[in-house]
Structures are given as structure tokens and as C-alpha cells.
Length: 61
Image 1 (cartoon, rainbow, N blue to C red):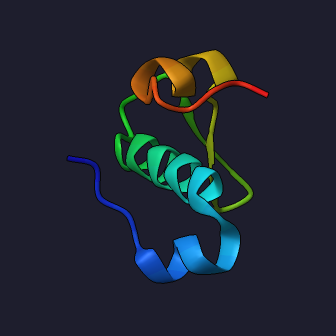
Image 2 (image 1 turned 180 degrees about the vertical axis):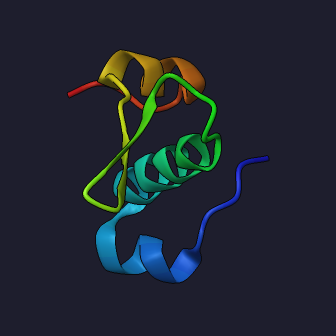
């Protein structure tokens, strides 16, 4: 079962919350090739295809 914040989902929408949670989890893996540090910020790279493959119930618009 996937977990997400209900408050965030109510404010921003379900797809947005799932996407944000996915990026957050990717950002926690600092050894990943998808994570970079620039200007004291964490940047995460993820394509729509990779997000949909991790969450197949979401459809690419």
C-alpha cells in the first residue's frame, strides 16, 4: 500500500501528491544518479515514464 499525506492531497491533488512523494523518496537516495546538489539544493531527475512505471495506476497525460 502506498502512503501519502492526506492534507497535501486535499490541498494539491492526488496525482501531484503521489508525484511529490516519489520525488522525495528519490531525493533521499543521495548516491543515486538521479540526484544532484546545486546551489545548496537537491535536484532530482525523473521522467514521466519512470514515475508511471513505479506507479502504474497513474496515466501519463
